[in-house]
Image (cartoon, rainbow, N blue to C red; front, side, top):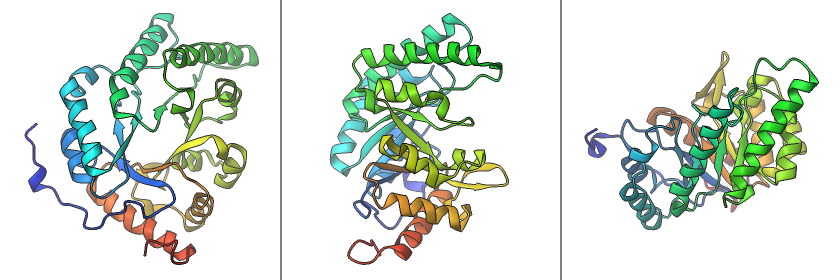
Length: 280
C-alpha cells in the first residue's frame, strides 16, 4: 500500500504524560501499515498497541527492517509498544497439531518483536463451547497450562503475557494465571457485555492487570468510540484508574473514534481530578 501519511487527519493535542498510566491506542487507526501509523500517532500518545490478528503474514509485515524502523521511532518519538498476539490460532486448539503450531508461532512472534521491548503481549485463550462438565473443564485447563508454561519457558517474562478477558468468566483461568505468574488484560467492553461488574473485577484481580482495553459499547457492539460508554461505567473505570500505573489502550480502529475517545476520556478524567493532577 502506498504511504498516504500526508493525506491523513492528525490529532492536534498530545496526551503524553498526562495521566498516571500510559495512554495509548491501536496501530489500526489509519488505513496504512504499522510504521506510518506509529509516525502519525507516536507524537500524541504514550504507547501503541501493535495488532497482530493474523499469524501468517507476520514475518512479512514485521521484517527485520520494519522492526528496526519501529524501534527507532520508539526512541525518536518517546513511544512504547504493547503487542496483541494473533487470534487466528489457539493454544487450546481441539487438535494437538493445531496447538503445537499455535505455541511455536507465538514463540516466534514474541522473539521477533523482542527488540521493541513490549510492555506486554496480550493473548486470547478461547473457551470451547463443547465443555459440558468438570472433567472437560479440567482437561482444557491442563492443556492451557501446559502450553502457557512452554511459552514462558521460551524466555519471555511471565508477567509480560497478559491473558485477555473474553466472553467467559476469567475464573476459569485464574489459578493458571496465578501459578504461572502471568498478568491480565482487562478488556472493559468484554466485561460489560458479560454483565460483569468492573469494580468487582478490579477488587479481585486489579493487582494482576498490566493493560486495560477501553472502548465504547452499545447495543451489544464493542470497540466503538468511548463516549458511548454508560456514564456510570465510565465513572467506575476512572475511579479505579486513579491508582493504576500501567497501560490503557483505547482499542478503537479509526481516527474519528480515536479523536472522540481521547477528548471524552480527558473530559471525564478532569471531572474527577483536581489540578495539578489533571491534564486540563
